[in-house]
Image 1 (cartoon, rainbow over the protein chains, first blue to last red):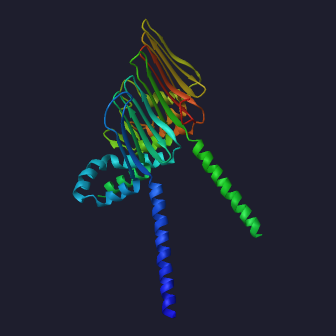
Image 2: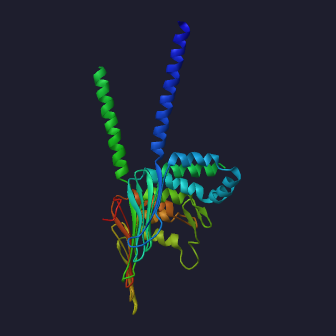
Image 3: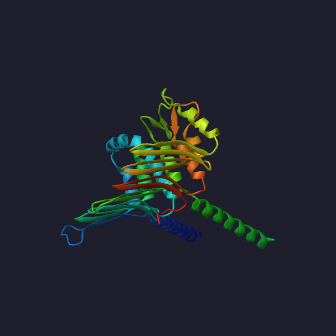
Length: 149
Length: 185
């Protein structure tokens, strides 16, 4: 009787831990956002259509498994500008949603904006339209990983 | 008693949220707008929260820029800029320099705590106005450096909307201004 009670308690504990872990993971994935890369042909143009959606948490996590040698090479380059980029990302995180840069030309349009904790880049030229969404938290996590290498 | 504590906590939380919202809304923004004329002309808009510009500048460490300060030789023997700045600070409001040439007119005046510079030539008109407090921050006394970060901080402290630079040329118009809005509407 006593052993079955212990088993039930253990089972409930494991279940609770699994649920709590699942909720924590879901919150982390939601907070990290989704990296979006979309390339579509401009109106009236032919070309490939690329659409990529990757959870930011996956990219940030993958950064921890990058080979040390590759990381060191990348981080040597980043050592100079890394702190600057990190500081910019931190301050950008505090700023409200806004359009940071907009270039309107006869052949090209570029828009860089902060939108819902993400950096959004839209580029439209004569042949294609590129839409890029990078969650600030992911960019920050990857930069921090590179800085530690 | 318990209810009163809850009420006080709720009021405190609401007050803190309001303060945070006001602090965020009161951030000053620097805007740059460049418009090229003609059919092929491009237009560029840049909107930067001043705290972002300030802290990014603080992080730059390359060549002559370090911690938001630019190393320059301010007193080059011909013009002693710090001395000129000190004299300007003490002087009364008025128009100090007026040059009327064949090709160019230049006017430098001090008015309402601001330095106004206007230069007009055949191709373009340049208007610059800068708060003396910002100029104070820009020119650190006794050093050969321009403290751009301190100037940005002083600009952020200024609650007035200010058009810093306006250049109107035949080919393009450039405007740099500070206000409390995130957009350029």
